[in-house]
Image (cartoon, helix red, strand yellow):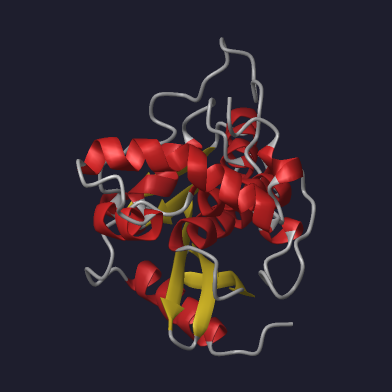
Length: 249
């Protein structure tokens, strides 16, 4: 109850608020530490490793403002803006009765499919180094590299986000191919495969991937072992690395 509405009244607490919150916190610190009542509050917080109450509430207030209320914070506090943060998707993405085919996203290594000529093989990968962050996919058709895509991301993007983006772009590409073409997307990140097969995921990108796969059963996605001499995976990895060196547009 103490933190109720803190995103409004504790964004910039006054000195009076700080003193009031400190007086509320102090009895609990004394009880936990078992020290003398004359021990300063700041000392108790340091000994117990518990930050000041106003600092905790201010952190929650700022987080709520920028993440949930989408209100930007001053530049001297953070350079992160609301549009830089990924929002969680809510509600059902599809009807509970709708699900992918059992063999559409297998979790075993799909190395055997690469040699097949009747399948369009698509390989995705990403790269995150001190030089930057990039993701890519490349398309192998009848032993010919038919198409490739790559993009550079912000340095604060995670591996999971870039892998999902590459997978999303790959399924979009595969969905635009003629209906008689069967596609196999090879991903070396098992987490992104598992997330994309979950219709209840709160990630917006995985929901988009799920919907495309659901409406295109001819498209399959599976895990492939990374850095195991797989020519497609190695090519996508190199393409992602090359892209990460570029200046972001």
